[in-house]
Image 1 (spheres, rainbow, N blue to C red):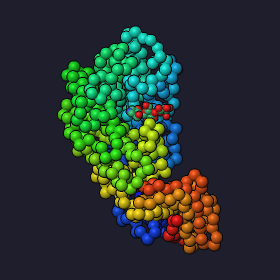
Image 2 (image 1 turned 45 degrees about the vertical axis):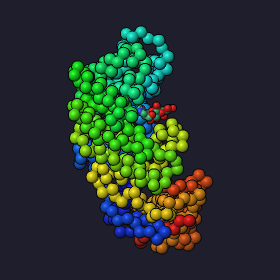
Image 3 (image 1 turned 90 degrees about the horizontal axis):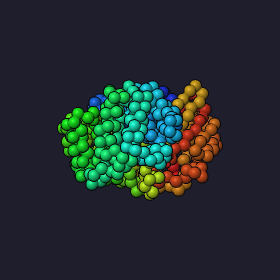
Image 4 (image 1 turned 45 degrees about the horizontal axis):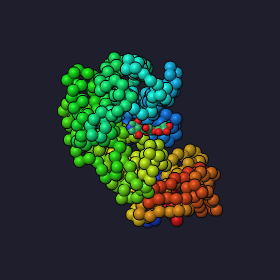
Length: 457
Ligand code: G2I
């Protein structure tokens, strides 16, 4: 069941006579849009694939549920990088990569392999060695043959070469370029093709989303590789974007690569903002996600969009750009943000009411029954604020049909007669403008289990 999506939860619970979900918020009525299918189904209906970068160790619980339900493609965020798979020369660790591939297969998802040739996250034995060009070439060929060969038949597309250009369109000085010259790119593609002829082979870079010097250098490289008969199938536009800065030429740029005869994928989409998030920034972020996904949807040869982590709790942004974050479509409590609905809308969905779920200028509580059995049930309350914030909170309601609380988590709850009061724990008192906090509980019921009105203070 889609516990993270209030409106879907409402729909899937509709068959239960005694349980429902409600948005009962300081006098505000819930919005009345129909819920959309998962993003992967919306994308498939458009002939596109929506993917996410993932961390293997997190693929359980809610993170695993959302990953399996919403996305049609997975990219290991780090697990397939050289430094991850061969930390010591000749000694391989495929555990996380294997885990992600197995998860994808179990959930009928594609896998984008990331990445074979890069200047970063290489093992120190490699970067610290001193190699002749012949040795370097043979190390690279072995690496590509080993890794691509291991996953042969299981990878839809490989980011064979990652980030080969400087901003001005010249080649980046790297271990590979400095040692082997620009043709390391053609060699890598050729070796990858030999190891898995069916995999689509990509060159992937950032700041190549719009038409500019860097994307033009990539364009010229792809054109010359194709003219030489080098196996190149696609370009990856990473799309690590800043709020409100989707390049105006994005669709035009995607189209010019398509016209060269290669596929295009948006491979690492996120939209970072200065923290704290607020409703205006989240609305802009929704527009930005919608614009990027819409540009891909508009070009036949754009294969799809991968977000670089789907939850703010699993994003590279905060540690790399201090003061920035909230860059993904789900918040840290796995609740879909307006950006989620921006993606859905760009893929032809109604948006399910996202972007305006909380009333203006207040904090509200959404109470859902997430599962129910003959004598008990599990409930969840999500407190969210828009145009307001809280530094501590208390949620109260009345159990009108004799329900009895037995246990709570992420809140301290007491029940006296019918009256239930739940207060924050030391670690989750803050609800920022544009943010939310969720807590859960178990309770007993018999006869009926009506949804109470929850007030927040
Ligand atoms: O930097 C963002 C992305 C840019 N394009 C290529 C991608 O491969 C890259 O991904 C990020 C990962 O999301 C981060 O998770 O690449 C970073 C490294 O450049 C990754 O960060 C590393 C940290 O630097 C390490 O300290 C950490 O051990 O993640 C590692 C695993 O958590």
